Image (cartoon, rainbow over all chains, first blue to last red):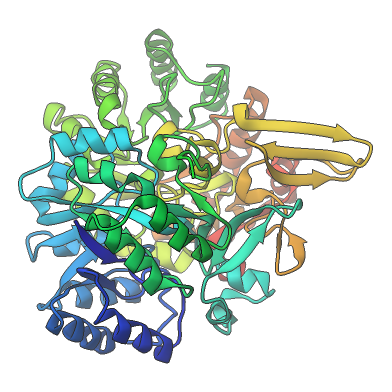
Length: 297
Length: 322
């Protein structure tokens, strides 16, 4: 099974991003998704910077994919998306139907987790439009995946999000700016102060969610390390790990060992434990509330 | 049915309805129509000159596919004026099987740009698109200049702060989301706890809000609770408030918006009658004289009286809100 690194969901500064991908060059991942997918105001890196990183990863034998913004509101965002779609060198992950529309018939592409593929008929539609890989939406369960895998279009690869805080929603509003009583237009890029998002707790102190700009993530970390055998049996091609500031390369090593059959999932789970600030969850995989932890630890 | 009649009788140009199951995004107990009732509803509306749109706007999983297709098949026999869909696969099925059936893209389709809308127009001949509640007025106007479909926008009702069709907060907490089950923060997951210190609302055990003894309590929609972030307790995502576009009706009219969508399917007939009557009056006044239109004070009061949180906002239409 291949391992992928999803796009960095947080606003890291230029140096942090450069250092991160300098390490990724030597890390045992096969596919790396690059680019800003959350907020178009975050421009620490421009397209030429991302293309430069993509070239370096490509030279190291990795597949580099450019990911697009999830929520398009302004014309300028659609225009930028088009330059990404037409870069002519690297394949593109579509996180919105606007990107699918731009990529259709132009170049093979990846259907990201924020395009709602819930059944075979939508997946076939994506295949006809030129998709060669799809990332299962996070709220779907194993039974849905099994049914989709049984009838997936020829040549279509399947990728499953297996580790990271879950991206649960997107808004016109910036929740990080709101937390600082700032208007979005004058946000001061406060999200840069939270390289793993801002924890949101209930009034009983229970960890619940995480605020990341216009995105709301889960507080708990989705972790399917115990389910890798099942994912393999279902013919899943790629396991996606979502970048976080803490322990990303230890996380990659833990999953690499299990994916290659060199490590028991229980040993990997122990390695992952320090990097799940508020513990693990796996409910979505079992058709339960996403925040639940179903598999035994 | 009483709510539908209230809407038609008070001047709605069109009414939405859904079947009584998970095929539509208002899958709440006591709502919606079986096939027989749907027939009667269509007759009632058509006799009075109102159009009927039927929503099948959740995303079917493989095990549900046949049932959703049957819902489309039944809808096609009803003589409805349009079918409102979200799932691209189901749209593909419908466009191939019933090429003459008019299709609208549901807000759950999550199309926020002319490029996304173009996909649905090219593939399925979608005639109208309901825009998610995340665009500013300028952005709505820009989309409208470039799309080959009619545009419908939300005008009044509870404010959804997240982009529709891509929010899974509800399934994260309860296992059921608008996309998968047609519900957000479902009632069966709600629990109220009373104590001398006040009232607590929980959703599947998660504390959504705490109310002082004399404080009015609202339905615990999970994005409208009070939570702690950075040491402060506040409405971290959104206050309980309603969206109301009266202030920008002339702008929407001039931009060529085809319809104003009013939340009515989870509401009482009295609410529906009041809101429909008020908006009918406002839209008629605006259409007659858009240049001089200003919302009458009594309209605003009438709507605030029935609004969530008893107050209103322009939501994302207004930049400062964002």
